[in-house]
Image (cartoon, rainbow, N blue to C red; front, side, top):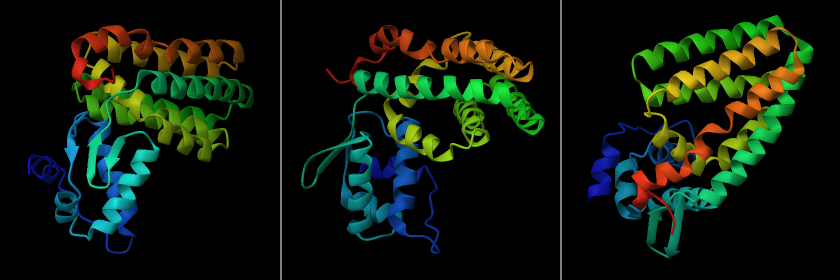
Length: 234
């Protein structure tokens, strides 16, 4: 029942106006990405169904969806566990995101939309506040929102959804890395460089800033693995 106890901390209540399975997916994904449900921990369908107040069918459907995203491992009909972090999968997701965002940065610098620049600046200010409070989960959420706004501004919101679905492994790596001294500061500096290049309509500088920004976490993957060996696939 330990897993049920962990999920109770989430204070999650189903919205009766929405289908249950997508909400279970959202809640479990958030718990996995935040490491509330640690890599390797077993998940019991009956416990989950009890927690969410639903039958096992939407729980099963949610776990299948999360399995497709690589966040859970279904070994047999009733044996499921949170997946351990797969570094090759993280590298693939990271490569996709970097390739897309380098082009998005060029597009936004060329367009020079004042409204977009203001939105990014506001989000950057919010990140700075969260970093000062050492609210790492909030900081990461604001980090994602900064990047999501770039996709939306470029007219590519569905690509952001694809990136999110593929990024479970790299997101967990990022959360393990973010408490490192100076890491939030380096992210803020990188975002400031991206914003400054977009604002000055310097497409090459914007692309270079994105490229540099999206190299940090995976460059430190060996160090992260040494600190959390049980969290990674063999």
